[in-house]
Length: 110
Image 1: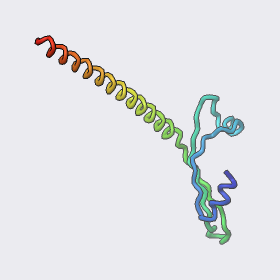
Image 2: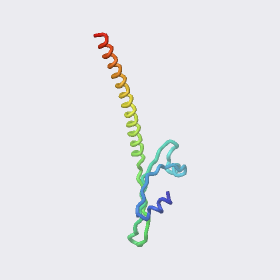
Image 3: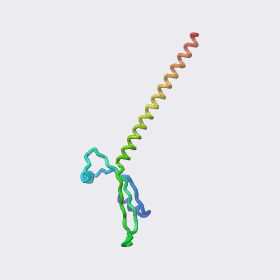
Image 4: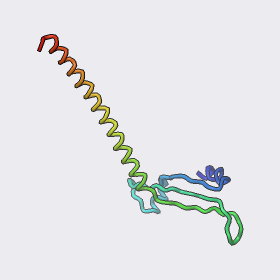
């Protein structure tokens, strides 16, 4: 990530979304083994107004709930797509059965 930061900092802004996976950091944050943590991190190259030196300002925002919610929405959407495919297949079989019944009835003169 630091190599990426060095290359992007030339454009003045670096942004990424990170999952916290480092065991030491997770321990420091008080996270248990199964607890997720995700952050949007931004680093911007700017000028210190007092010293006029270039500095990097880093900010982070906890987006764990957003990441989890997006995953849940994606899982629900995947389930709906699967159910829609199953319903479409069931409709196709029902239509085929109905067509056979209509054809049989026409042959027997119902």
